[in-house]
Image 1 (tube, rainbow, N blue to C red):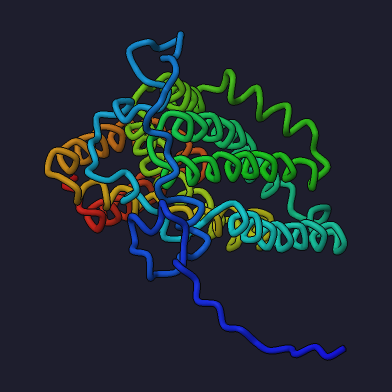
Image 2: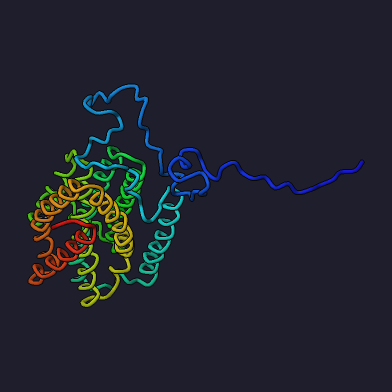
Length: 330
């Protein structure tokens, strides 16, 4: 018996899936991101309208005042699909866990000056409630936004903010200070310095327009809060007490620097789509920026004392520069 083996070259009929070929052309191979993102939004054959909101379809672009010619223009420049996101966060988590382990191994938390520890925990620990609110708000954005490009990225932000809340809680545990966690909760519920910020994020929990919510929390509030606290306040702690808290808040700094690329890209794409979007987004930024400045003023005073006004103005200018780069008029 004789067997002849030979290589046969098979030419594929197309290089990608049909729904992608219709958008990108049949000859262009797709990467994982467009495969898991483009043209996946259910858009027809709805069997019923939600009983809690019969005025809208279960997936409905009318949940925001923003209009888009193509909702898939709101792409994520990081090109995160689930696999890429988990790998990126896994690497960040490994680094953060190593930082916590090093602080524990070398006894850096135990030897940290009491004045610095109290000052840092007083400012940082209540912010876990802001991160939890961001988790809820981004979950709403993911649920009611239209197009997988925006909804999946918002869900990644939802879970990232949960991670921020957990790492802030671990600060109290790292310093073996359970009383500080209890005090932080009471400060969030009753402290005069925290009530304006608490009202801001809780008002956003009932905001119906998901794009305005994205502007108010992800762009404006996070755009002011993260540079002020995880940038300027960390610098202050480094100069006066040492870099321990900078090590233990590395996740927040690196995450915000990465996340703002997505937020800014979404706003820029929406503003460029039509003049009405640009005007509405600009108005939202002006409206929520003014309010956010007011609610962050007590926190800035708590963190920086007599330097509060200058620090707050500095981060506002940084936010305005981001808005202008995204095509907004603020």
